[in-house]
Length: 226
Image: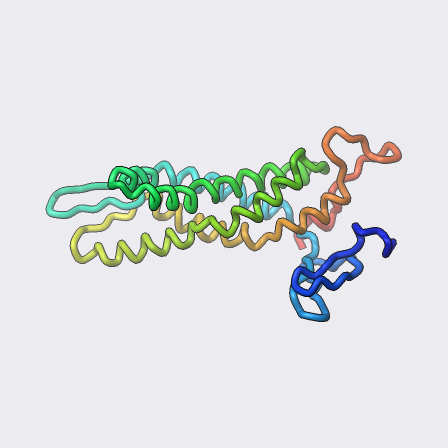
């Protein structure tokens, strides 16, 4: 390791102290001795798990958007709606800002994060860095705080509890899908995308031949279950 190489140094985001960046054992992290803030974590030892969970979350996301959330039965009158239908209803009620916020926080941003993660993870499992890698990781870090599936789910449950006294509430497929999606997102967001930058240093860009006639593959400890 060359201490003069800026790529081998890492700066603390809180106090700007510089340290040599060293490889870490599995499931460990490095903290700043000066202020105690997190510097970086070890490269994920289970990319297969995160990739499979992201794909499952994407399928569940489609189910949650395509089916009704609940069915209400009051005095023989029944009604049901999907999340898209609720957003359209908000828009028709002259609540455009609220409709846009709900659309972005429950559909647009979560979908962008899932698609971007799959676009990055699948090629890296195959041993190369996809085009636009840096921009996508920055995009993932930007949209992640704005995805609020769990807040939406909590709001739906509170509303259903209040509606029980005035109507018969029948849970539909999308409600269970949103519940499962909340748990899946908890696993997905626990994965720090910054760790992929460390992994990318050991891989080649797509279409670039490996050095010395050999093709750099993803490290075994980054793909095997710990």
